[in-house]
Length: 374
Image (cartoon, rainbow, N blue to C red):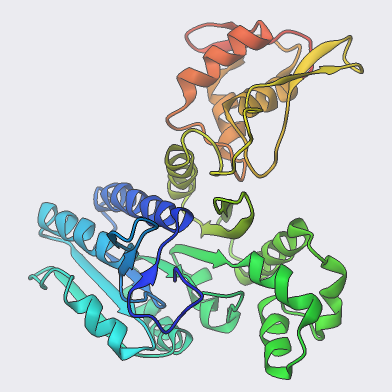
């Protein structure tokens, strides 16, 4: 959802919200294309259980379309390109008027393309769909879980973590930081206790305004959700900032599909303009600082909430410093395992920075690194 004013049929979409729409739309287009080329995949299921009306006004009071409408149009194109495979969308909101508005803007169903709109509480819809996943094991799903506050029902999400697919969670961390220190009502306390899986809200009070503590707790829960499956599970987290440079939420992408993990990271960086977020670093992106512990060498400034390509190159240098003839595939594997750093789409630029800033010797298949810190 895009606005805390949840009763409005046409909500306001601030720049960070529009950026979220763009990221999800771009990713779904590429994600669907990759999967449709996989022989074992018989089709795609996209679920947005808290979809709002899909119609918004931006800061200029212009109408913009949100995730459900953008994705529906994108997946219709995919369905027409692959007529032998099925595409299904489940779009839900608990306010009927919003769904009625949404339906005005959706494409019509076709033989292998179906949009199902429902009016339920979002978690109830997931509890209805979840038990059916075993019957559709060859369909690949993408679940968008986008509440307007820090409210996550992990029981509703559990089946989706245990099956082949992807889950994208909007972790509304600004709500937690603002409300938890002062929450009084029992039902509100229960909401945060459920979201962070603690027995009493007093366990969260020490977090204060430390975003990292809330993020760490969410990742711990996700690690439990995936269960004991032998499949490797990947989690990528990207923060979204408003125009005042305050963090509003994280988008947390969860998947056992390695190609999807790599693609999502790359898509996020492209969406943010070759950075890991839209945070304004006020011109410090490529500023160097003198490192007195490294023979007076300079290093780049690191902002963990807004990495740039120089930070990626520094990370690679730090891991391979002083080593010769490192295969490029080892370098890309290092980045592919990182929760934020991409390799896909950035390999040429990373090699350029390694040569320019770290005196690396780059050949067709290998890189030799100078013996210096990143």
